[in-house]
Image (cartoon, rainbow, N blue to C red):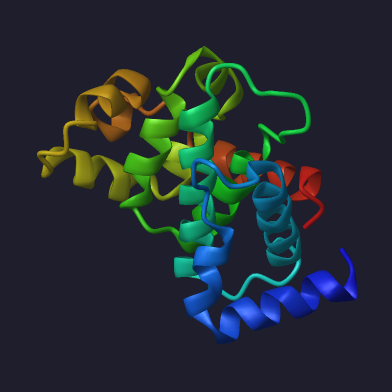
Length: 176
């Protein structure tokens, strides 16, 4: 993380109109766009502001998901296929249960995502909140979610304590 990266995040926080400069679009240099998203995410892991950064983190995650859908299942050399996991980890910090659907979409995107994306992300949003959302939604992804984590909290594959330890471990691995 450089001072230029910190300055870039400050600019992006002050001016959401420039977020589109980080959007993944066909025909643009996806590697450099991903590199710039990486710069932001790596500063955010050190300086995440829960009160103000949710929309930015969600946007960056969404752009990585778009890239992953476009390139999946084979990533050309030079792309960081794990950057999306940093974005997902940062989203977990906000505990917004609606992110469950983003995580289910990623987990079920392809074989690599299924193997590499930690199931804990889905429940780290809050076990009771997740199952309450699943019980009262008509989201088409609810059936995939139920196959991944079960339909009821008593069937959850992880306890709150296990999720807390997972989150601590991920924070360490991401350098938080």
